[in-house]
Image 1 (cartoon, one colour):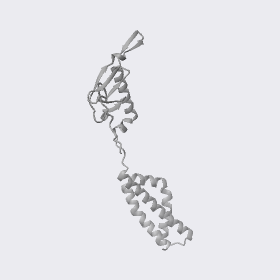
Image 2 (cartoon, helix red, strand yellow; image 1 turned 30 degrees about the vertical axis):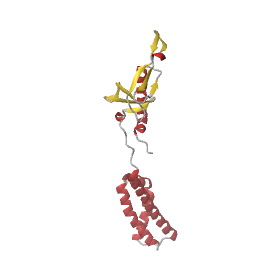
Image 3 (cartoon, helix red, strand yellow; image 1 turned 180 degrees about the vertical axis):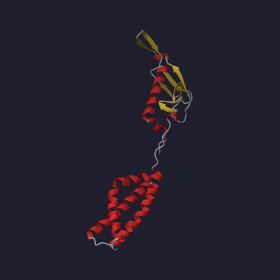
Length: 208
């Protein structure tokens, strides 16, 4: 194949490929030509001038121009393939609304809660069995046998640790704090998972 014919083919192929890449992936197309626009236009303008006004060129120059045209076509094909991959499986991950995060396992207990005006409802916190084949509501009780005496600024305070028991499967979980302290700790952990974005991973089902 003569170099003149090869240059014509490269120039003709570049046009439809460029159109398809621009149509399916305009952002990558624009970015590609912004960074390499001058490098691309220079050899193409020289090739076009040579094709329309026959001039005697050195063999090495003709080879260089032909390679440049084919390289540009290959680059456009690469952008087009990236656009196809993005449309098939490269969609951005779905952002989950934090207000939809209303249940999770924390400290060995499955908790449920709600929001009021975009903030955690501190009056709504329920405990359930974390076992997947049970999920029964847990019964809370104060363990007087584990009573603790804590010294405060105005004397000693009695602290009755609490425990949760499942009446269905017998699951139990003991805590070294009372209900007020435990509830505060649970809400702090919920807020931490929301602020760090960890809640999104915990709400997304894991693929096996």
